[in-house]
Amino acid sequence: MSDTHDTTTTPTSYSNQGRIAFYHANGKGSGAALRFEFKPPMGRRNGCFFMEMAKQKTTASGGRGDRTPATFDWESKATVKLSFMDACEFLAVLQLKQPSLGANGKGLYHVNGDKDTVIGMRTNTERKGYTVGISRKDKQGNQIFKGHFQISPTEAIGLDAIFSAALFHMAFGQVMAEAA
Image (cartoon, rainbow, N blue to C red):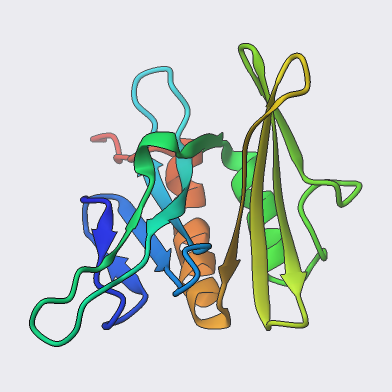
């Protein structure tokens, strides 16, 4: 996928390659893009989702015929790996069983090498939908990445269906019946 998206059409693009991206550019350049990629289990590796967030790099410009779409900074993106239980946490928020990610509502805490990441998601009653955030710091506490993305109610329906459909495959992979 390129780092551009024409925001004059639908704000969501679909692909049958195990990946879906949501693009929310704005005229101030403070928008973001959120991408989910499904990785089914393989060998001894569990199934998972990779969630990537990129901040908007440029705003759209031009007029009819020579329009340049907004771009997103995929080179400086934040990537997090979502396990089976992480996907269940997302579903609990999407299905209104809990108001935000994590048992204490403070998000999901991931440690990866020398980086600490907090993945947040909460219902957003003011804007109707959900706010997803990624905050990443190094071991010294310096902010490496901080971004937010607003998921619309319509996008949330699709994301709920994707996570729900993927859970079985994340846990069991492709199950085949044995010959009798």
